[in-house]
Each structure stands twice: as C-alpha cells, then as structure tokens.
Picture 1 (cartoon, rainbow, N blue to C red):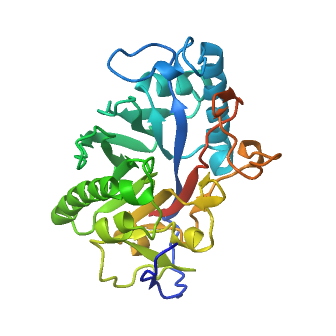
Picture 2 (spheres, helix red, strand yellow):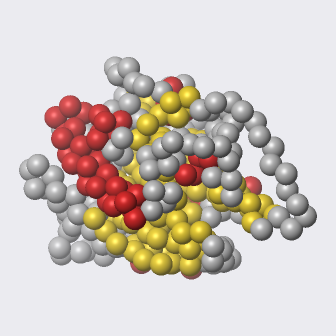
Length: 348
C-alpha cells in the first residue's frame, strides 16, 4: 500500500521570459535504463557470473550478446527524436568493455564517451554513464561504497561531474540500490543505507554550493513514496504544470522527485506479478526547478516504452520485453522500461 505523503505543489505561473536575439536554447535529454544482466561471455573468477557463460544455465553466447547490444542501441537511438539521449545512466553492466562495444559497434556516430567504475557487487554488475562528448567535458568520476547492515557487498553509487558547454557544472549520481529479493520490508534497511550514503554526499555538494545543479538517476528498487526515498534521501514529491522560472525559491539545497506525477498515476517501469512499480526515477536539486538559464521542463519525465520493447501477447502483455523468461531465451531488451526527462538551457 502506498503511504500518504506530503506533496509540494509548485505554483502554476507561466512566466514568458523576454529573449533578445543573442540568446539561443538547447534541450538536454536525460535518460536512465536498467539493462538487465548485460554480461560478457568470459568467466570472471572473482565474480559470480557463471550463469551468463556459454556453458552456464542461460547458455549466454557471443551471438546472444551481440543481439542484446544491437537491441539496446536501437532503443537508445530511438530516444530524443532519434538523436539519442545527451546523458544516459545505466545499471546491471558487468564491465565497461560492454559499453565500449555498444558504442563502437552500433553508436559510433553519436559522440558518446563513458564514465564507469567497477563495483564490489558479488555478481559484478555496475553503474555507468554515457555522455555526449560534443556537449560535455568530464571533470571527475568517483564511487561511494554503500555499507549494508549485513556487510553484503553491493553496487557503488557512481558520481560523475561534467562541464556542460564550458559553462555549467553538473553533478550526476547513478544508482542501483539493493534489491527486494527477501521481500520489500525485510530488505528495506539495505535501501535506507544506500539512501543515507547518497544523502551524505549530496549534502556535501550543497555545503560547497547551495545552488548546485544535481541530477540523481537510477533503479532504486523502491518507489517515490517509500521510506528510503522520501524520508532518508528526502527527495520531495513535486507536482507541477509549469515552474515559476526566475522566482525566489526557498529550497535550492533540497531534492525533488520529478517522477512523482507518473507514480501518482500508477505508472511503472517494472512489473512484479500484477503490480507496476516505479523503481526507475529522476530526482533533481531545487536549482534545476527554477533557475532561469538551466531548468527541468516540468512534466517532461516519461516512462519510455516504444512498441518494440513491449510484450504484446500472452499473460505478460504490456510488460517490458526481456532477454530471458526464467531460463528461456526470448531475445528481448530488458525487464525494465527506461525513463527520460528534459531540461531547457538558455545560452547567452
């Protein structure tokens, strides 16, 4: 049951700024996608990857891997009016070499570069970020270790600092919080630990700059109304039709969950049994809601589900079309839908 939560409702005030002829605009398209077990076919003796080997239970071969990379490139290309996202966070990737192959084989014309770190997760699945190098320069990449109550190793929270067009610094956090494999309630302390780890680093960024431009994306394995998101991370819901751009906003150094409208409508990115869950979310700092030059386009958050990544028949109709159904190879895309959002940048 979804808990009752406080909703911050931004005033619906449409302010049309006066632009002079020297100004231009750019739209920044941000996406996140859980790529569902993107493994290579080589045994890593330090990780539990035996399931995804040619002689493993999934019979994971180079041909199947190549099909998956092609399928993922198809989805990525289809985003942003076939231009591909400017920023794409991903999770469930075994090694950066897989993202290298994705770009080199199928996306070489898109100017993507990769920010990535290996994490301590036992299965070896990590987080990464693809960014368009014609728009962004990489400042730094770091990873924050999440210490769980049971000391089980889990994914790093990937932190990437980027410089946009030599003018604006963005801090991007890519997340894949611990799963609900032992049940939502029993596993909840693990996601609270992840939320507190992220919150501590975000607070450090705000301490250095209360107007920091922060975008948090990921598969949180919790929904916007769960304790980890709402109470521990303190990512407040935001409902809006149009943001009051340029007005005084008292909470620049706070976080706001732009996924909340979709959540309130019952939309989801992952379906468990008969229940849609909005696990994949986009959260922004207050500065990105009202900054005149660089702000989130209100209500632009979307669960991205083009027809070719949707299951169209049978008991799983309407769900994401996955690579496997149990151990049966289906040749699909992922068991999660991607999510996207847009930001408007006005350049002098």
